[in-house]
Image (tube, rainbow over the protein chains, first blue to last red):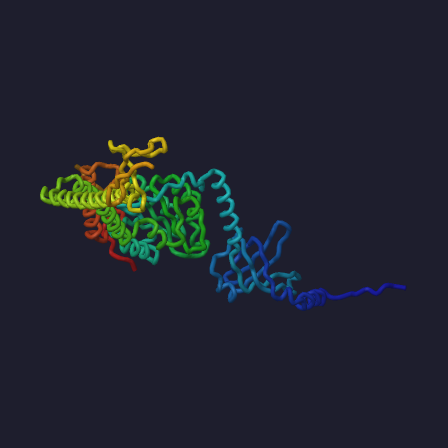
Length: 394
Length: 75
């Protein structure tokens, strides 16, 4: 059996392929990344180019209408992201990308460059803490390297003059983006260092895209900041923007206003500090003087009359005490005497006589106590309480 | 004698306050320190009170020199 051969015309084949590709939704709305080569813009306004990567190429066309909306000038070597539709140019027998819009694919490259430089300078030690200089507390002059117009410089001036009008502000106008920006910034830093015309330098700009801020990611700017003997405060973009300049600077401020705040002290705080100092000094000296005054009054001799009165009073009190003691003494003695009298009284022989006892005595008055003192017919006297009785012993 | 800068005055004032509070100076010395301290404080106060806004813009002359001129204000 013979196999069936499909025999078609060229047109039919190309048409078939076109219909096949057009039927695939993913090919109708596709984004393709690649490098431009064989770029040609015809007088008609249509652009013809080839997108390539390491492995292959893809033909592309951008018609005049679409091309008019381009915001950059494409060229060979430019990395782009092209959006459009893949279809078949039947007459030419080729498929191609019909580009509707195209943008630069530089962003990824920029981030890569940033990371590379950051790593290189980190290793060299440019970001090390030990190299960061302290920011002067009472600067006489603040240097500012930024654009002379715009919010950044206005904010810096407002904050410094409000907080610390004593400081002079010296502005070195720089380009902050685009061609010449990095050289301009480096010139500013070198100028201030060469002329020693400021105590602190603020380097920065207002917010923007990564491309806008790119000058502050340049190696020459980083090295100029590192080499600066004048302390540098970086103020690039918004709070969330971090550039190489921010890492090298002696201090990174999130915004230009913040940079201004860091660069000078606040005068109301200084006024308060002066008041506190005055208060402390007053107190210290007053306390000492009071102490001495007290000491002095203790040592000074008082009015003699006072002393005399004092002693007088002491004397009176002593006398009073003596009197009391004396009285007590007398009473005590009186009591003792009475006691003795009572005792004596009790022991008195006269008392005995009243109780009925009698005392015999001989002619000489000797008291006859014992039996042997008595002899028959002896004469003796018997003393009773109220008489003396003459007696003879029977 | 050179006029003291604001920074020098503030620093000296701070050290006088510390010395007086420490208390181990003679009475004569503390009176002298007190007088000096009050003088410094007055000086600093005056500098703060007198301060005027000073903003200058650097421009390059045709000869390539850089000079400082008054800053006109920002747009």
